[in-house]
Length: 114
Image 1 (cartoon, rainbow, N blue to C red):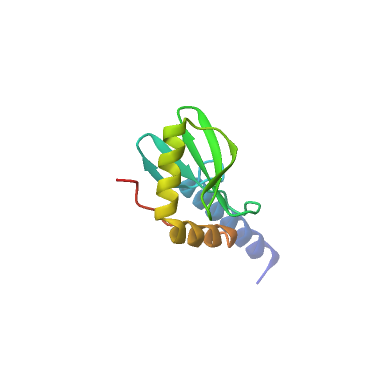
Image 2 (tube, rainbow, N blue to C red; image 1 turned 135 degrees about the horizontal axis):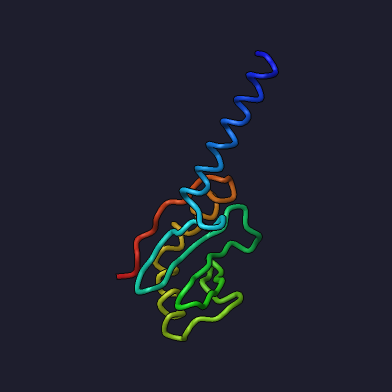
């Protein structure tokens, strides 16, 4: 394969990857669930410990996956309790999504709290 063909394929791959990331992420943070005005996101290739981010009314908090507990940030007490309840119910799915995102694979959606 010639140099021109290699450069073309490299450019096409870069465009596809960029478009893929834009489609499935919001600033590198795919949304994995949404309920009661709370948005749950996780980063691609994020730092340990395994955690997720909860957004509510302009506030953001990072919570450990197992056991679900606040790491940093703040949410109203009732909202934090709901997020912790949701995380307790979905720990296995959260851990699976953490592994997927560490491998740069898009996460799966997780059911909202009902």
